[in-house]
Length: 134
Image 1 (cartoon, rainbow, N blue to C red):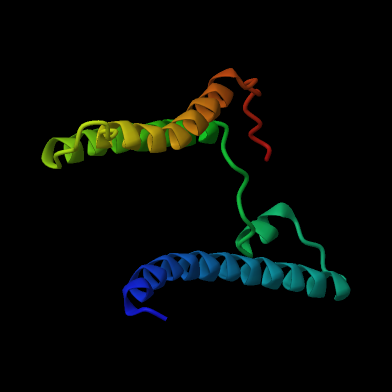
Image 2 (image 1 turned 60 degrees about the vertical axis):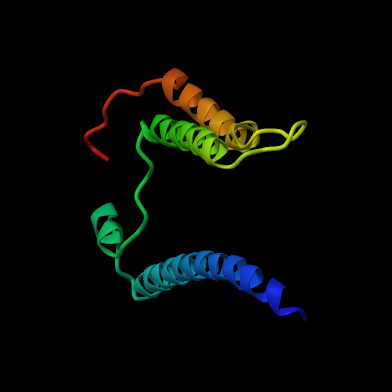
C-alpha cells in the first residue's frame, strides 16, 4: 500500500475508533445496569425510581433539547459558511471553478437543514405541564 494514503486512512480510522469506544462503553454500562437490576429482582428486592437513578440509569431528555440541538447545528452551518468565505479570500481560484465559499455553503447545508428541522420541532412541540412527582 502506498505510504501517502496511510496518513489519511489513519486519521479517519482514529475518529471511527473514538466513536466505537464511546458507544461500546455506553453499551457495557447499560448491560451492567440491567444485570444489577436483574440480580436485585432475583433476590426479591424492590427497586424504586430513586434506586434506579442512583445506579446510573440515563436521564430522560429535557423538553428544550430539540431547540438547543437545532440551534447548535445552525451555528455549525454558519461557521462552515464563514470558514469557506475566509478560505476563499486566501486561496485564488481559476476562472470557471466554484469558489470555496460556495463549496462550504453546500457542505453547511446538511447540518443547517437538520438544525432548522430540530429547531422547528423544539418551537412547535406541545408543552406539557410540569410534573413534579417524576
